[in-house]
Length: 623
Ligand code: MTE
Ligand code: MOS
Image (cartoon, rainbow, N blue to C red; front, side, top):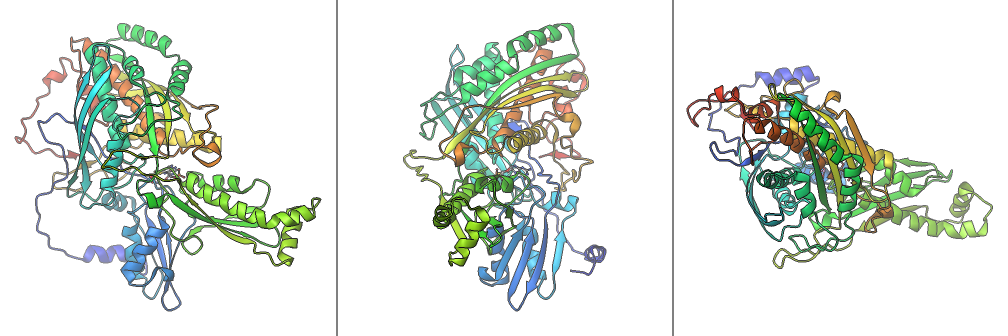
């Protein structure tokens, strides 16, 4: 703890620590074993983790933190300081992006800063390299699958074992494994299914929540066996996908009956808008005329279950004050992390009156759930609506008495009549009663659906690629705010494109993260956006299970980025045909230039010596 950042850094450098270096386990990949591997991902929020702690009075402390979970931060700080929660106020105005990375890991910073702020305010903001080094990211996954199917391409049975790299502590790893397994069939009816996920403890920083929460990893694996079936049967993958799509009334492996399934509507509209049959033919033509440049195409659906797995998290609170000048102050339990939550909450309250959303704070709304699972507008919105109902009821007599009046005059009249113009509202989501012993009951409130078609072009000699187009049809119910929702679809999709095609974490064999900033870790840039990116929100698809018939949007579209990965695989498959290679082949995620190049097998790739496991020490380990 120092007066200036420079002093603190100087002091930290002067500390000499003697370590005994022990062998580091950083990857769960087993050399020589052919498990499909899906790499991890760094959150790369624009604002790194930061906390300012201010001691107040004798035994109170105020915490300004970049967290998605103010209540969790509050209870952690209380425990660290040995004081009750009612002495800790955690305040969050807005966060410069979280993406799941600030649900629990933000506590690393807030706990120590709170402890240091014994007599004076203390602030700490991690540098980018520190943040990348210590806060963990998406869980890398390995998977081994066996799939049974008929000659027509109908999937009959599936057995998958997943391994996830949890890092050095539990954090949310079991929950991530759970979400991963219950999304393993993605959008397809699989009559016989077995899935298990083995959570591996390694010496990496603890991995944590990340947009999609395990589902992007298993959906990539799912689309991999679907595309393997197509390669095996020599059919177009979209035919196999369409054949196996879920329909209304089907049961998931956890026995939830699917209601209001819009998958086929999204599918048909996407195929139509992307002119897929026309494009397939044009791509075939193009590929016949070009030996070293190949194009590929893939259409991929997604189905994403909406719920917090822990029943108790499916609740929210809100607090509204109406002041005598008619202005309204709104507080609710969700945090604004760039997803437009506060804007949506103002819409719920009323477009007509003067509303200000104040910061999220544990003093105004107690025991709030983390902003996550894409559920914040469902939950907090319903709590805000409940608060409005309470206040409207109180104001109703004054409206009835003076129908010609206006908001301000009704508020004034109520105030002079000694009416309480503050109210606290609450919402508890309907029961989720899934029971793993009987494998029955409700696991999710409802599902979000979407379909994406992507076209890519690869350079077989360098492995470089560009995405020519992506066409997305997403079901967000009756959108609360189409501008925000389209932004969320685009943002999630591009974050997925980074995950599946660009972003690769490299560690030294001793366990030092080598990719510690944008110079070595490639996140999507403007040039990585598909030349044509079109997002359509499915029309006339009200969802009676959520606020104003809307649907969650924050995470589901991320998985649609698998369409870019499988379009790449499609292009690579065409290139392999030129040297007589057909049938399934392994391509790990992310599909980097290196991997694309090597998968386009030809006489040049044959010249690359393949080292025997154990015969050489790699300079870097991919995680
Ligand atoms: N959008 C922005 N701009 N920044 C973020 O950090 N987080 C995502 C998603 N969209 C995020 C975002 C994640 S991981 C989730 S769970 C949801 O937003 C959370 O917000 P919501 O519940 O209001 O959708
Ligand atoms: Mo999102 S991973 O649920 O914060």
